[in-house]
Amino acid sequence: MESFPIISLEKLNGEERAITMEKIKDACENWGFFECVNHGISHELLDKVEKMTKEHYKKCMEERFKESIKNRGLDSLRSEVNDVDWESTFYLKHLPVSNIPDVPDLDDDYRTLMKEFAGKIEKLSEELLDLLCENLGLEKGYLKRVFYGSKRPTFGTKVSNYPPCPKPDLVKGLRAHTDAGGIILLFQDDKVSGLQLLKDGEWVDVPPVKHSIVVNLGDQLEVITNGKYKSVEHRVISQTDGEGRMSIASFYNPGSDSVIFPAPELIGKEPEKEEKENYPRFVFEDYMKLYSAVKFQAKEPRFEAMKAMETTVANNVGPLATA
Image (cartoon, rainbow, N blue to C red; front, side, top):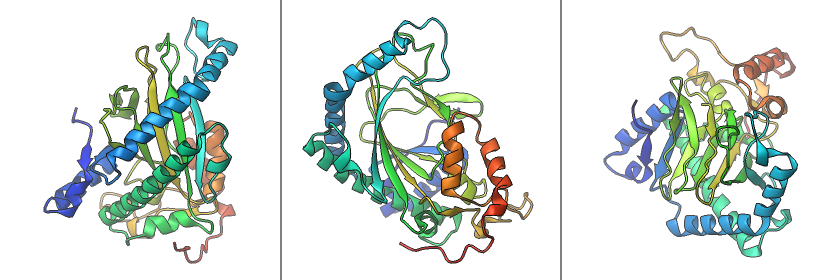
């Protein structure tokens, strides 16, 4: 099997721009994932985020996780479980309104750091969306405008730790799923692996590369591209060794009232396909209500359910809000 795509974004600024854009295009069409290096976020900042995130887990979350595992009987598993994940998490919201000042147990320095980190990830997310626009033949800024709705995008970060698991064959760190939203940027542990994606019926490891940012495409980009790009099923495997795995996933998603539908410019572009929309038109908030109940199930029935609701969305969307 071909190797997982690792792409240096600094090459976009030189003679290798065309080759780099082609690598991004191939990754989006055939993997739904790729890994960025030389992405413009300083190594010093990433090192601080990793250090303080791991310190926060040890100080504030480790004992709670152990207690939770014990209370749920997961410390003495004898058979496989499919309804829980072996992870410890908390969530930070950035847009449209930040909750960073209100999240309990965070040191002030850590709050300030994560706000700075979120700003860098937001900027990189929007730069990547424009690169996708360029490869798709869409006007620059199209995806960002679709995501804006009337209240700005929904942007947040899930901070996860996957502690060592005594029986990794019986419980996943995170069960297999596709991501509901737009574009997801992951800063992951470079010492402990565990993230896998499903490609051609086989689970493939996403390699931990120091200071890299892993990018994956969510369900909304599959809809907007009319299936040219696909969201891909992925999971986290539990590990027995080491200190556990850190994962900081930032989700740049459409605003709650954004109307999502295949880009008209992409309809009928593929000569072997009929000139039609392959996906429904819906409000992002409605999709998320459905997704929250069936996250770990196949995505295709979600699209079918939204198609059945499509008549509730006005055909005349009107002009898209701009940034």
